[in-house]
Image 1 (spheres, rainbow, N blue to C red):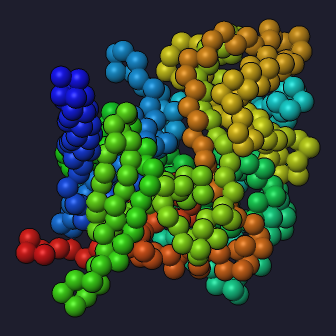
Image 2 (cartoon, helix red, strand yellow):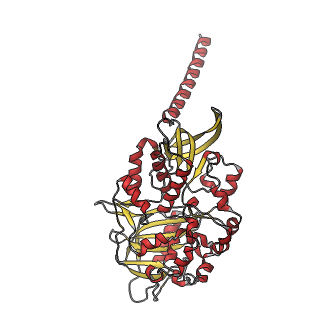
Image 3 (cartoon, rainbow, N blue to C red):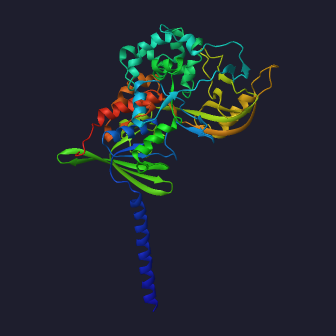
Length: 479
């Protein structure tokens, strides 16, 4: 009897183990995507546009995103009554490319609403309010202006990524402070220099990052007040793309854990298969595809899941990232028609001292202001919010007005890792040429701001468009 009971218990244990293994396998299989032509890692501007473009060209796609939403840095703070406040990208450069995408997605574009603000220049690092005024965009931007004429020499180098001929290299490798001074753009450049918010201590950066992020088209859109916004806000574009491609092709809350890029021999030719293991919320999921598009910032901490080869690892290890935040605060004693612009008067080009506030601007909501903040790597949310509160409340307005009071933090968004750069030495040694040659290596392609050389959304789209056009030919139904 005891022997029978022991055998029965042993069989039950075995059956239970088999059942649990079956359930675990079933969970993986149930969540496993069928083999796709392309897996796209990241659902920011470049990833979403790549998905849209690939679908147009006849490819099946799966978009994998660790965040609970698509859109990346295009983040929007919504309130009741159809009011919203951008927490990332605010507008699109007025280019024919935008007009065509607007037509394809059937999203009307409208001019960025203009609001005349009283600009107060401050030095947050010293708690001072400046009495002297600074030039606006239009005061230094002119057809024969110094920046426009200097940029004309280089702009074609940044049209679709970063392509650097050796003959022009040394000018581009000057640090930004020296480049601006050499071109008569030092202190007068204070306002447009804010366009490099999120790039750390700007003054010491190689000038190529200024030139690639502040294009003629960008400045003309701003100066002529022709910047565009999709109807419904910047998020509307990515929501429309998601609906167009189908909810089933998007996998948010998905953290990638491991991948295997395999070269296969097929019908006398070479093909590939890429297997990806991930966790979606709390379940294991597997994805398989023939090609991979990586759109997330390519720093090593972001690519632990990807079995990088030595060449890839050596290149991506050279990127340095910066921390960039947008914070919504409720502030008393700052007017709804006032903005604070931070200028570090100790710096030769008035570049903001990091960590520090870039701008404080009013939102649509009463007493609420949007603050952009450049942080040192790894600053916590609490540390960022604490410094912002301290810097704002420490401003000395003298006897003219009551000091400001921060009442409440409404929302904080961390855009990091942001503003990827490499050293002057790396650029001189051909970093960007080597980076461009990675396209297609191990059946993997790279898009995004770091590869495009610009954080301008339209530049990022155009670069992704060029990569897809070059490496993914239009497919017929029979392919």
